[in-house]
Every structure is written in structure tokens, then in C-alpha cells.
Length: 163
Image (cartoon, rainbow, N blue to C red; front, side):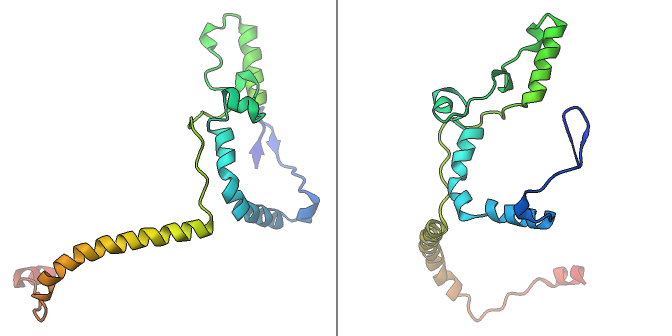
């Protein structure tokens, strides 16, 4: 299914007792948790830690989100390492610890709107759209009403091509 860094297979996975030995139940429970309102309301904190402003510097220290120095992007210049054994040792450390993702955000990620907030926001956007639409359509209604009762017909040459 998966492979370790050294290439050996990971094929024996022990599920937690609450999964009652069933992979389907394990997946179902985890999917429900990940799609929950709680996760939705707190996902921005995780984004800040992994990709955002809490990945480096004082914010990372305050959030207890500091990783081994070799895991950070750009932390090692392999071309500057002259000793082959040192290069291999550092590469081995990086492979063991993994790599911290690139920092994408320098400011806090905004929280996701709750379902209620999203509905209110959607309603207010809908009202604004309705107002704009009414203004545009209202000014065009006089033109449209002058066409009422008329039937638009395609030129016979187009009808012939369509046949």
C-alpha cells in the first residue's frame, strides 16, 4: 500500500480498537470527523501552523511549532558541504525527519464562516445581486416589452444548414 523512506512496504497496519477491526468503519469515522463543523471552524489554526505565519519565528515558538532546523526549506546548501560523509549524514537526517512544507502565508488565515454565517452572507450577497439585477433588467424591460407579441425567426438560410 505504502512505502517507507528506505523503500520497504508498509503493509501491516493496526487499526485502533474503536474501529472494531474494520477499515470501512475507520474511514467512515475519520471522514465524519474531518468534515465536521468543529474541524471547519478550527482548520485555519492548522493552516497557520503548517503553511502560515506560525511556521517560523516568534509565532512558531509561541505556538510550540518549532521543527528540527534541517527540515526547513532552504536550510541546507548541499553545494556548500565539502565533506561527502557530512553531506550523507545531513541527507539522512532530512530523510528521517521529513521536510517542513513551504511557508505560503505571512498573516493569519481567516476562519471559515459557520453554516449560519455562510447562509447570512449568501443571503446578503443574493440581495445585492437581486438589486443589481433589478436595476439592469428594469431598465431593459421597456425594450423587451416593446418586443412582446413578436416571434423571432432564424433566417431560412440558417435553417437549411441545420437540416
